[in-house]
Image 1: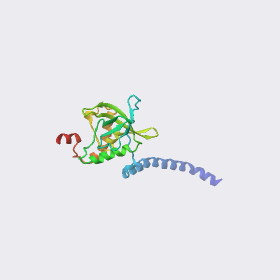
Image 2: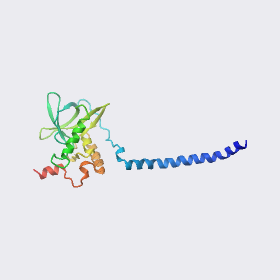
Image 3: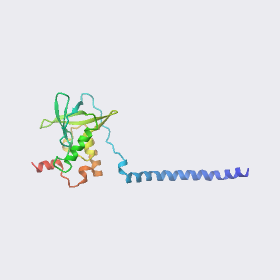
Image 4: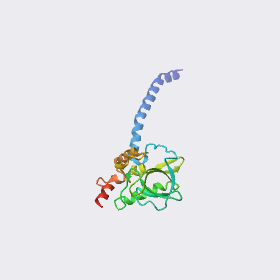
Amino acid sequence: MKRFQTMMNTLPLMVILTIALCSVAQILLPNRQQANSASNPGSTVSTLPPMPNFDAQQSKTYQLVAGSVHDGDTLRVTDGGEEIKIRLCGIDAPEIDQPLGIASRDHLRSLMNRGNGAINVVSVETDQYGRTVAELFVPTGNGEEIPINAQMVQDGYAYHYARYSGGCPNGAVLAGAEQEAQSARRGVWANPNAVKPWDYRRENR
């Protein structure tokens, strides 16, 4: 009986201690998570905002023409008969003889290789060189797609070409993708003195 009374007397103290320990754990846990993220930045995977769905009248599925990715913003596709040269809408990748020009091309190739060769093309217009300006989406399975234009910018292998992004269905997404790449100093943003491709072309005409 005496032992029982002792246990009852100490029970409130045990409850208070338990509550206090839980409170301390709640405070320390977020700090631990932030520390882990800081020490291992690769553990945090950033994602692009959801892209709108396009109906069949707005998009068409093509196949990538083998060996047609010559730089980071142009390629060719085919539907089995017609072959179309595509210029990615709203982005500008380094020219092939600029720093990261080859890396940009290779990154675009790697994104294309994540699908099965199929590309969903959302055509916007035809430019002065006869190329189809478009947004591209590569199906990767399970109903998911890689938004190629925005992904190239977010990964730091292309710039947001604000002058020509107004007509792009997801033009507004490109600005946010570029801001993230710039903040993380990815790709072209690792060098603050890098020459933009549009300036490079103007200077080398």
